[in-house]
Image (tube, rainbow, N blue to C red):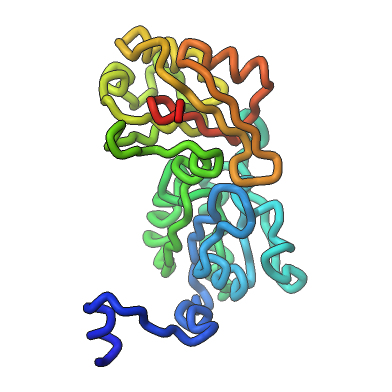
Length: 267
């Protein structure tokens, strides 16, 4: 039986040790967009790690493994550029990040763009892909482990559970529910019947809880709040939807944090 037949039959296929390290080698003058995972350094993917190892220049955010790059790779011969957007703090404009990516690629460097979580989940990753593509730069995308699912899991909170809930919605809480620029239909979200996983929602937690309750979500719906998930600073708290804002305030919860709204938060 050949390898293809083994795969079709469901039999295990032997992969030579280190084979993954030869599968992905970005070329000079290209950019690799890497989802770095939810926080812990060792939750980056093997492909993401390989892209970092081969990069000449790495543009980093403040989330994911960016703060512990030295634990992952030898950075001594690499140029590290911090383009973080800190919550309610210092921000590097997206246009400037795009410009730097294009500039370094055109200079012939192997460029890695390291983001937290998955780059395409509220990470502006596709904006960077568009800018690079329009500039004629080849770009690779390495998916990452999104915090919306992995952080609750690290705290023992399942997003779905047989016999309880078969759907979930990932929501950005960055914009308050009543703000004109909000694209979330909170009235509809109150009635999904599934789990809500809210990221970037610490500041607006009270307003989000109020909107959900006002639109019909029971006030005693279980909630779980996880701060700095998957890291050695992880903290988690549980309660009810009508206590969400108080939980965050009383425990001085700071970003990055994920909160889960739904019956699974009581398991």
